[in-house]
Image (cartoon, rainbow, N blue to C red):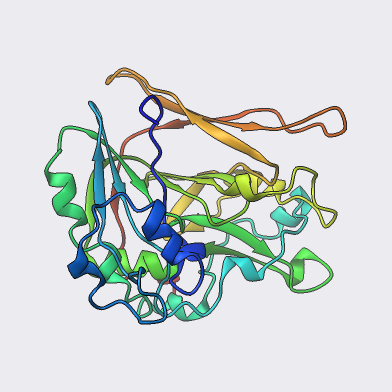
Length: 298
């Protein structure tokens, strides 16, 4: 770990009622503070429901790490939708449309009270304003998925997730400069969501994807959405490669003046031909969400 340190992200599998006690015993990086556990539930004496953001500083980079184990007002979860086939023909049906949030209640901008996750975030960044910044959180800000509600895509929908976090960031007025990417998991695929004026959303949830392609299909045509003038949060989706195969990602360490690149690598063996590598450039962007949160065009 001295040669390749880990930054481990707390997510929904580390809720206190799930693996939370193990998280605090083995993975949470902070020193044990008895005061932190004073409000712990008696059923989970070594688990705290909410912990604040923290920073991990490198020579030229700062990682801002959030605890997103549970969000308030979450009425629908990405885990409720089984991965399904999504083809280029399916994608054409959504040309020129605005992507709604996964939970319809989020579209009002009123839902999303998980402000505890981000309190103090801006102060952490201000301690290292000259560095490149990365936002690390288990749940994505700018994920894109598809739900088939019938026998064909015309009865289905595209949706974005996780809207409760979008609204919480908006309510708190979070403004982070020079952000290269939001790095997440949660969605059990690889995805590199690139909106026109926001930092890239990288999802490396495919470490939890089975090696063989699921029998019910691949969501790979989500990658062509970038050619169809589809918008999310008022911004055009430029690229969105999505692959549901087991693999991992490598982020290049570039000189300060160079453009960084991420490469997703997919596993294969003699019985399974994996997809080729997928690369994306990471350019610094301002992360500042609309004041009203996730609202749809009228």
